[in-house]
Image (tube, rainbow, N blue to C red; front, side, top):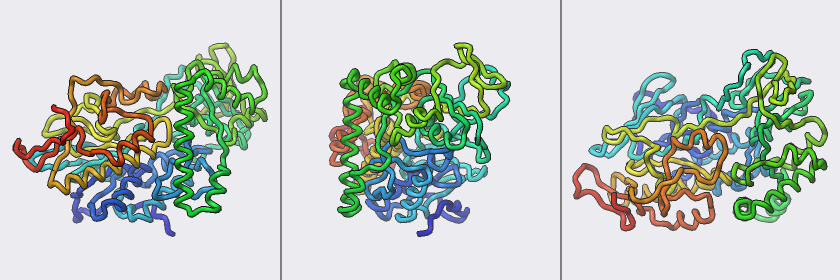
Length: 510
């Protein structure tokens, strides 16, 4: 099957009005469009993406060893079983998966690349959104009945950059993994990777084959989980069962496993600490080294776990091809990095795996009937929509398991909402939040640095369904799939007349 990676933008003569406008051609946006094709055929839709290739994160990030940090049986979609041999997919394999999904469902014909969304304004009188965009720098306009933002939650144009004193003095190469130079040669060179998160744990084993030595410089340790790179249960099931049935069983198994690890870590942190220390000791065989560099000060799952397939990260440390230094950076010097301890880490290449920079909804500006919308002042409804904002949904996956699990739930709920509106002749659906209900940050279960730095720009959550944002796929699936899509919503037909408004039976008064 030929894989289509680029689709040209429409000509000026073509219509620019659709029922559903999806922003983002990554895993979430392509998956949402495939759901539309499967579950609501005939819906007119378009996908806009500011880049010139589909894949989102998986097309942008090209650093060595890039892979998923969750298993592919839950990271893939239920209607498109993962067929790769590895449980954690490589970046190239995930890109191919997204491209194949788009081609198989005809989604690739609806993508408009080089289209940056700038703003969206809702008119209650017209019952549609007007979306202002730039197409390769030129202004253009779309209108639509419903907007679905599948833009992820980080800034594609810049990463988090700490203010390192003396960086300009460094004589070597300084690299951000988000913008990996294609011509970077680190063969037989000394590499220092700053950070201890998922990117660092992925990079280090991949770079040791060519580098002279790789050092991970961390301020504080992280918990590292190890799982088999090839799942023997998956191999057995796929050998004896039809692909879709095998995938369904594997998906259920891994949902239960990841949710179990999360619940175990949250409910029994002392025992979880012992488990992760045992894993480190199993690979490194050095108690002093483990207690110095792999004993975090926080509890398991206060920050996201990092994952090392087959313990590859531990293995390169055990083989002395890589090492860990736990210290603070005082400043950069020409030959490398001077630490607070006074030691100088000599380096030819420094990779700053220092985290992401959050960006809500791709940075677009929203207005409703001429009034600017302060997204941070809104509350999430069904983890999908914003209080007081009609006909706009957003995709935000789980932070404690595969992103795609909630992405797919959100798309299915949105399709059911569109079907309900069509069946009853409604032209708008608006979540209504009771201001007497207490509010909490959108994410309360994770204390990662990148979350702390930017979560205030996102909407809040409430205390009662449908205003809570849970991190439990099993509870969400049980509630969302057969659930009432009208709860918390007010539905209206075109025009401002009060007689045209209908409130769902479980809706909360404004």
